[in-house]
Image (cartoon, rainbow over all chains, first blue to last red; front, side):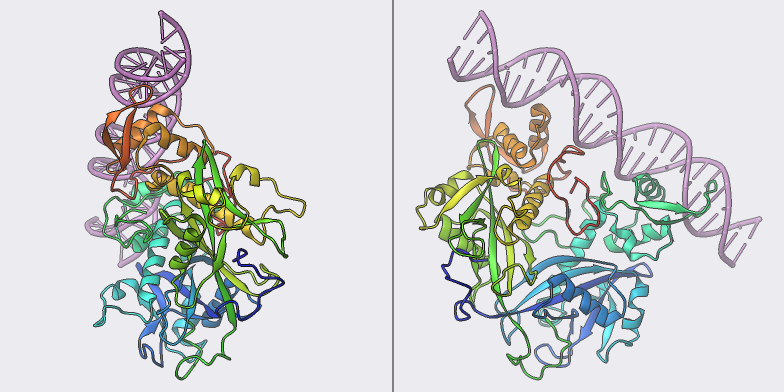
Length: 260
Length: 260
DNA sequence: GTAATAGTGTCTGTGAGACATTATGGC
DNA sequence: GCCATAATGTCTCACAGACACTATTAC
């Protein structure tokens, strides 16, 4: 808030540099066992015809979260199931036209939330749902997406992977009713690993409030249906297999490592 | 980045609302077994005579991290040992004078980094090093600090508590050379719990690259001296005792719980 | 029928937590 | 000598991971 600069009675507009503040969304979903994200094709330079994350400017009287929800609704026509602030990107050169600080949000949703967006019903833009795996190979200039969106996307994927370990957010990728194997396939898609079906089932059902059975349970071999429970955190956590080839770790940490 | 609003060739300044972008620092240190933070007393309204987090505006050609480092240096006269972006606070009403979006940073350092600041050597401001425990009781209007800085501080403390679990950052609170009991006292101060000395020692020394012994031993008992090792992450993590009365959990998660 | 797969039984290895014991230095 | 405390030895319990087995559904 810069209280330490002495200003008598409110700020003089000449005292602070004006910035544009934008919000960018990393929208993650799991479809057919693949982790996917939503991208928008740019029309103009810079980065004309490149894909970018959906985003927009924050309005003068709008909270940051509110802006993120608005932008999600504009693309999909439905309310956002889960959203969290990821981090803020503000390199001076990140947009060659002007100084834009972008607050990135992570949004998790099921593929059904994206049906309008993926059919282009909500806008005349070229909106696409793209597998993350298709974006891992950088383009000729070393990147795939416009601006610093490769970095934002990578940070978001790592955040989502970490959050599945110690929260119950995995269910936000699924419809209201689902089976344990459905949930396992979400974990496998997000983490990019195969999990042991039996142990996964036991673990998930053993975490109080993670999933609640719907309808009657019969004996062995029968697939049961569940809904989300009330718990937000998973204790103890469900950890990713050690030393596995997933993504970039916390960029704040000095050295690389593949875990959390 | 708001690529979806069609703009021909760079932004027209009339197209986006101007914001002020500030950086606020939550500076945490451990002194005499207490977790403490640095506050600055405000001179003017709003919140005259209240304490606030140190902060300042981001300059036109400055990265966000750079601004945070600059502000830390302005207060203390030394380089910041560890810094990470916490999150961004942008409620429209958070500063009654104008729209300010503030990117908060978490800074961890040893008490020796704050000697200049705490003696007022670097500024004519009223800079103080205050125990976190003294800020837990809200004032007459429901808060202790200016603006939304109570919330920022609480988020920062929770982040620091969580990070001690799965990173080796505990050593950033200590001088170059330290003993295992010194490190344990850091954990106890940050988490606000008593830890089992024997098990803590075994765990810390067993994590590859967390601490490296530095030859001679002094002090009581067979106390060994150590330096930081090269590892940034701790696997498996060193978890806080379950169900313990520390701080607010991840505010993104729907319901409260006391763990991560 | 056969194949695929959900869920259970059970064993094993690892590690956290608790407690006792030994070693070392301050007083 | 006596006390405080660091570090180790050891036991127990919880849980992850592996494997085998059974039950059920899809074909």
